[in-house]
Length: 517
Image 1 (cartoon, helix red, strand yellow):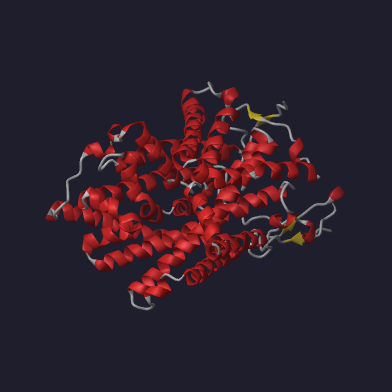
Image 2 (image 1 turned 45 degrees about the vertical axis):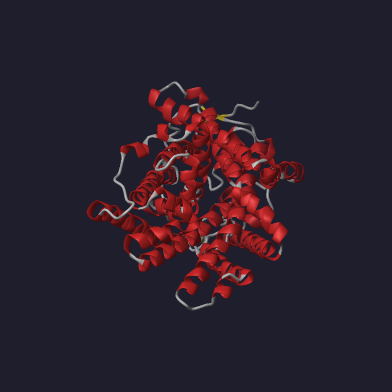
């Protein structure tokens, strides 16, 4: 006699136990909801994670300072794009062989060293939590500023720190609820966010270019191919400063890889989505920056700060377009907060499954098939951070330095993942020239370059301002030591491995050579 068991609402099937006896359904561990996201869904999540409108609003004016010369913003974007694209290619190759929601954490643990993989997981989760403290506050600020512009609240209310914190907490609660409720709801929400910001940014960028071509407003200029030439960036320091900004500009596409266990064709689609999203992002960044440079004099762009998209929208078609741009930035900020919380919950889930992180993070809610408890815990940590930074000016100052230098964390985990890809395929590096370029050389160069970018972040900010983010990273060292000597599983005893074929076996599982060293 057999028993039909349904896991998390899925189709019932027989679960054989020892000697063929059935196992009760309660003993079967729950899993994430597989085969849910198609290529379009994964790409939407990857693009939304980068938050084009938010990134443009936050850092466009800084591009001109970084370039050291007027109208070199597009060239800076291109210089920044290439090394991150190489890392996206590395993610494609690593995910193709070993799809795991832990992504970089899981790959480094198997291919380099379990302790180093754990440390890398800590860096990613730390970066995600820090950003999820900062972004909701910005969403709260933008929400209140929008309400004030409509006359709904006073200027004093719009600038009230605790009211901003309350609105930030409400946004955080909303996205946490959606994350917990299910990956399908989460993805649908991301589709809405992506459509809003793409229609606004792309539509009004095209309108701005047309306005220049047709009406030639005062101060406008025609497009020049030289804007795309990296040689026009002002020297080595300009390239370094631009690369530092670029890491933040393109950060987030790897969320698709952390959702691989919930994707269709999990060994292919997440990696493809990451690469596709990089080109889509490059296109929207270049389009908007070129449109801004054509319509606005360089000095006006440099003077706008984070209001640049609002100002650009006003110059395109009046104040109402500026309001639409505010909504686009707000939706972008909310969307990227959610897609930063998502991978953090998946990484901690993967670490908990490996028995090297608190067990509670490995719990999957049976109906929704999401790491609900872990997601809520991370959200409460973010809420605590919001309240702490709001209530203490000294803490807020330290946190400001953390956010300003978060590129150190991003550059580190991107960089080591690229180098890991090259190392993983070292035994088959020269089987095919094309694979040597995409699977070994480019990931290695991208990884080295991004580690250099991390150094540049510290150098440009100064050691004093960079100290909080450096201490955050180094905090992972005692934590991984504690994990090493307090966990009972075999995670830290696993042999390191390397790939001895390019494609893997026919089932798509990785073909590994157990090369214990």
